Length: 353
Ligand code: SAH
Image 1 (tube, helix red, strand yellow):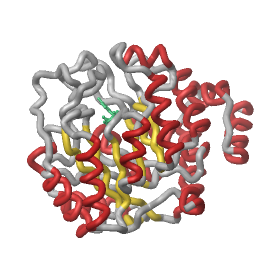
Image 2 (cartoon, rainbow, N blue to C red):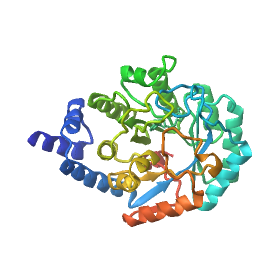
Image 3 (cartoon, rainbow, N blue to C red):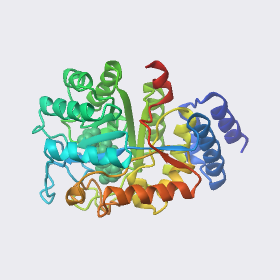
Image 4 (tube, rainbow, N blue to C red):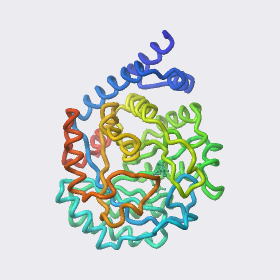
């Protein structure tokens, strides 16, 4: 279709798409267009980052959460969740173990758990940064006040992941209870950027009730926010949620969107997520070939891994981190890429440092 041809060429040249053009690409998705997009997207990723894939060691330090997001397995109303918290010592030991394995980014992720007061988070950040000054610390602990974010930044945290989840406010309301507001979540993202964090936003692919229009608005929101990192992965149902019988997001649509995102925001740090590896055994490799350039293996103690269940059948919950790292090195090597020991900052951001 000539229409599609001109949209693709415009995307390659200008890295811009209108809402109508995105919807057109989504409505007319074919395997030919998908392969072409993946080729262009992986090429542009290689132009900026070579064949390097950055690793982030993910420490899931608490599955207590005060929120009740309808899709999430650790939502507060899930009585079946077996709750745990890691101590400061357990977290810093995990980080040091990760350091020895070659990780230079540690991601601390958790539910919104009021047990960890700002002072504790500050203390944990400072301990990791003191012990390993060359490590980037990324936080993913939800919505906090400007002052809290500032305190974390001043303590040395480098990056913050907070998916916007969906840019459409009505859709947001179908995925979250009324006490959670998309305005506040987006404001948090602007606050994080203002403070100076390398900031990550993103959404689930194929979340319940998601339309092509919603996806178009998500991509336009991301383009406007211009974050350093973008996390997208398929929605996967969790048995203890009201969405347990909903369909998981698709592999091909996720790969298609990874390619479009890479082309719209050429230097963005874009993980091939664990959720993508969960819906397909080669999901993460295919994600890299579609334009992703980050993987985030699990560094949490094996004993708690199964408990951090946002969705069913999550992969890599049985292996030690060292085994995960080896497995990933082989997987990434098999497609001609290389896992590197590097902080892996966004090159645009690095220049500004
Ligand atoms: N509490 C933190 C971390 C959330 S977990 C925060 O609020 O940011 C990280 C991400 O996992 C979420 O942002 C969400 O997009 C994703 N997630 C949650 N449940 C999921 C599910 N059932 N399937 C796929 N991804 C899910």
